[in-house]
Amino acid sequence: MVMEDCGELMVDLIDDLHPYALLSILKQIIVGLMIAEQVFEFEHRDLHSGNILLQPTHQHSIRFTFDNKAITIPSYGFLVKIIDTTFSRLKYGK
Image (tube, rainbow, N blue to C red; front, side):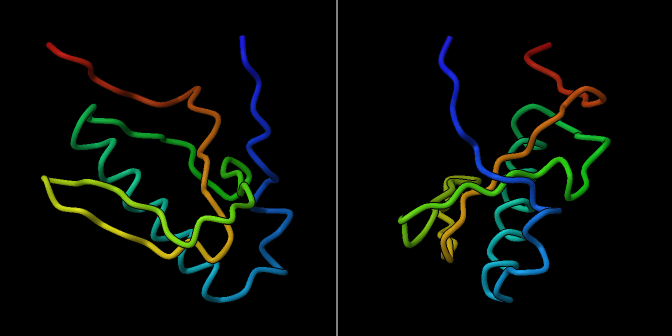
């Protein structure tokens, strides 16, 4: 088993986030959930700032692929990790 430090809770950092960082975080969440919905019919069902971890990064941007189109989002120093999928729904295959 490998453990990863996925960062700090968004709820603990939100008051100190730069507006551009907050916009990047929201975009990462939206695009990530959009892709998860398309691929797995995923629903989190308990998403709030206490279930979002912010991991510092030196990457300038994050690249997603959706419908064979590249989506690039400036990171403004953070990668988003969504946690606590206890109440989530997903469908894999049939």
